[in-house]
Length: 451
Ligand SMILES: C[S@@+](CC[C@H](N)C(=O)[O-])C[C@H]1O[C@@H](n2cnc3c(N)ncnc32)[C@H](O)[C@@H]1O
Ligand code: SF4
Image (cartoon, rainbow, N blue to C red; front, side, top):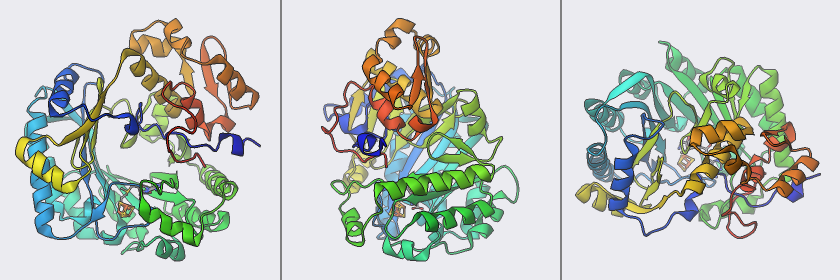
């Protein structure tokens, strides 16, 4: 079996190049130049990401940029700094462009008063028009969610709600220092969908202590009985060199890779049987969902916020501590230190710590990796037309000996025109993507493993 061969540290490719390649010789002035250049680039819409780092309780497995919520003064100072950053950045944007997406991530956005979040949506809607049916999305921890909170968000036109369930098994939750949903999840879903137009996603993680293939199957079956619009099964990313709290989980013991793979496969089987369509590696949606249609038409796209369709994708301007803006010309990342963020963004509107400008070749690699990761195929002519390059230029980036090796392992088919990833290759899509990445050297950087 290829499990040992391919279960090596490899980037998750939420960006190309991955964030560990960003450099500190990049500051607010460079970001301002990237923003100015982004006004006439494709995709033309404005996509907004706002990072709310606060959480009421920190989960031991957490890989996100999160910190404990201490007091409301700190929250207020933070939101004031985010408002300054929004005013500065949006002042550099062409006022005729439209917002297609606003995404609140974290941390736990619903750990703070809803008025802070709706106030930020109001600030943005004062300055820009929206496309028809834009996405206004929030990641919520259901341990702190009630119907009044949801009502306030609904009134501000939030229409995509992602609930972090992780597991329904209370013993698993207790081991990872997490509380279960305060209200029955069925009740939350029913309330969110009540007036129509809003959809619910549920997040799960497999590979946590105490989980078995059978226990995770129970959790997923319970989720299926609620018919969420979307569901994600994240592979637990164990990166204790970056997240020290994860070491606590090693004491209880983590499932073996083979067992983890069984959890993934069992869950995928249950979801397919229940009529869910897989999108990308680990997302599942009800048939007819925008993402399912986008994938069928090879129009699926991906950014730090997850999968999206070409309709809602845009240049991503990100606000808040650690937030990463993803623009056609490159990336800009804010400081990860909340006090520094408040001080700098509050004063100058910028809190940039590092960034990256993409070369012509890197833009091509980024498109290749996006196409492979989202649509499991690569059409050299199609992709080169989108980039204004010749098919030969794209074709020569493929390392034929690596492709032959993947083909020999039944991971993909390829010829002079295209690469088609096969069922077996989908699980190791990160490894296939890495074969196009000139910056990737096996064993050189520390990344999580596919399984
Ligand atoms: C910012 S959190 C979601 C919102 C909220 N804070 C919560 O926990 O419900 C985003 C998602 O990242 C996933 N996640 C966090 N740490 C992870 C890790 N180490 N490996 C894989 N997924 C992880 C979880 O599924 C979580 O729901
Ligand atoms: S998983 Fe969510 S609630 Fe838990 S620490 Fe991370 S961001 Fe906070």
